[in-house]
Amino acid sequence: MHGQIQAVDNPVDHMVTRKKTPMQSLRVPSLVAAVGLMVAVAGQHALAPAGDTAVLSVVPAGGATGVDPSQPVVIEFTAAMEMGMQQYAALHVGDVTGPVVPGTWTFSSDARRLTFTPAAPLTPQTRYTIHLGGGMLDASGNGVDFTSCASQFGGQWAIDSMMGGSMMGGGANMMGTGWQGADGTYGMVFLFTTA
Image 1: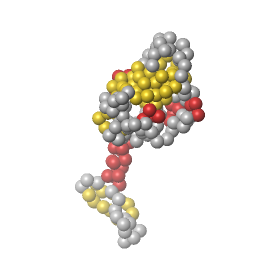
Image 2: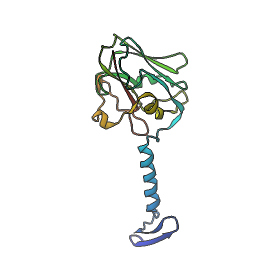
Image 3: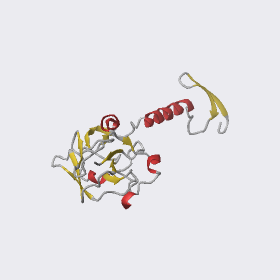
């Protein structure tokens, strides 16, 4: 039978003609349907292994203008975050490809509030971008659900085309584990402008 063409009739797959191998018959329509479902879900950024933890607030929110340059950047989560996740947060001058602003990201004692304190006050009348990596994990090891960030906090999905395929701002490599989520995005970005 090896190499022969066979018709396979299956009420689910309908009539499909293909080469049958000794290993197994491939149900082409089922595979196509599964790939189509994965593509549809990926388009909605729903493949991340997100748990119940979500972003509760972003200050300043994306799209904010007239932001006080001395105001800290504060991100709140609905549950405690895994130790070390602050390494997947950055503040850039300009867009996400711009240089990283020197400063310190720290979590509150309950690991639910992440605060950025710049080494020097932010520059007045300047655009900045907050970036949260798509692979951030909560204390249980589950991914963070960023879905509400776009509608509630002015966030945008960080994708390759937005970054020109590179996120090397300030010399930090922001394309690897922790920055890229299971859905293929690089998390969320929030643009704001200082007063």
